[in-house]
Every structure is written in C-alpha cells, then in structure tokens.
Image (tube, rainbow, N blue to C red; front, side, top):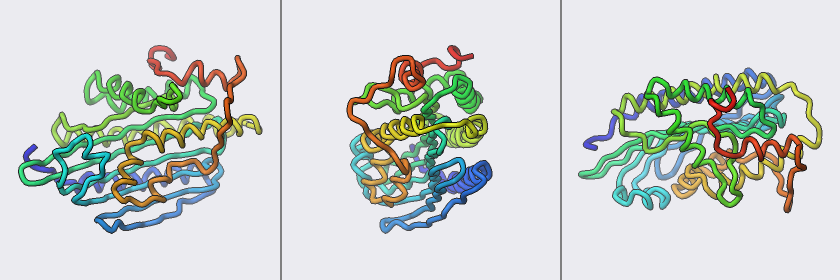
Length: 306
C-alpha cells in the first residue's frame, strides 16, 4: 500500500461507539454506573477504561477505548509480519467484555479495531474485530437471534462474508487444550484490507453497530429468571474457561501486554469471580451437560435452529 489513510474518522467513530454502548448498558442495568478512568501511555497515546461493577444485571462490565502509538512493535505483531519491524504504528479500538450476574444471561465480548504502520517504502493498514457469545445455560432462540444479527451485519458486504467470519470466529475462540469452543461464536475478522478503506471502515461500523441489537434482547429475556447455588457455581466454573482463553490465546491480550499497555485495562476482560475444579464432569442429561453436547462445538446455527 502506498499510504496510510487518515485515522481520524475511525477514532471519532470508536469514541462514539464507546459512549453509546455504555449509555445503553447503564440503562438496561438500571442500578450501577460506569467508572471512567483515563490513562496515558509513556510510549505514546492512551485511552479511557470504563468499568461498571455490582449492578443489577452486570456483575462486571468493561468497555475500553484505546489509541496507542509507537515505533517498536511487540513480538506478537512482528513475528507474523517481520517487514513491519521499525515502523511507526498506530492502534485504536473499542473492546468490551460483559459478565452478567444471572447465569442465564450469557457473557459476551466485542471488539472493533484499526491498525496502521508506516516506514520509508512500506505502509500498511487493516481493520479487525467481531463479537461472540458465551452462554452458560443456552437457549436455542437466543443463539439463533445472535447469529441472525451477525448475518445482518455482514449482508451488505457480500453473500459469503457471514459464513467466512463466522467460521473464523469458531476457529479463533477455541480452547485447544480442552478441545472445546469457548461459546457459540459470532463473528471474527482480522487483517481486513482487501476492500478499499471506506468499505472496510463501513464493515467495521456495521459490526460495531449490530452488537447492541444482538445482545440486549437476550438480556431482557433472561435477566429475570430465577437461579440458585447450582447455577451460580456452574457459571463460576465456566468463567474459568474464559480466563484460560484470554491468558493463553487471545491476541489482544498478548499485544497489549507486550506493547506496554495499561495492565488494568488489558485484564479488564477477566471475570470478577471464577473457580476451577479438578476433573469435574456434568451429570449426563443435565442442563449443564447440554451446554457441552449441543453448544460447545461449531454448528450452522442459522440452518439448524431456524
């Protein structure tokens, strides 16, 4: 690529996306408010972390905006793209993880980001992101709604985009050491620059703008369901899988820590409480077993659940 595009429109969109998502989450929670924590990075840039804790719906919800710059890329980036060593770079994005209190409301993650790097004779840029759903006690209609919204986000950009990025999400959010999916997937894309800049940016916006319509109706349907200690303990056990994935496989976590990012913001994705139990297995035929047998594997949800 000959020149890096102006990132200003992307940065403006991401700031507004953070504002809009936080306002919607405060409204549906109805009790807690986001704490705002602005930070600066010594090497360049900074961001604003927003965390809501001990709400009526969300035990913890974090929505981060970051805009960081530098001249030395972390190992996680240069290992795959050695040609970028020594380039001036910019990375900006919004990342969120929501950990509800009620085990019948799924945990969810979303991220939209932009990266550019340039040095004499070599400039490049790309977009990345997506959203995924991690239920503990899944409902078919919720999973179907989630993937219908994902398909709608992709539809204006080509007939194959949803399937391609859905399958990418299935591959990415997979715990290899457990041989199981983290949840029921959604969308994941990275290194998006095969369209022109405006079309790539429009796709990022579509993904970002479809997150709330995908997630909030599920929250409304499940937030009032009664649960007990059994469901709570299973939720905490499955949250342990979330921790395992983020520390072992997540590219954003590795990039943030290796680039000298703010640790509190990077690890905001961790659940406030989690547990591990040696050799635990669900009772056959139980609701907990159904998560494993019916949901923690790649499936064509739109065909199978419609």
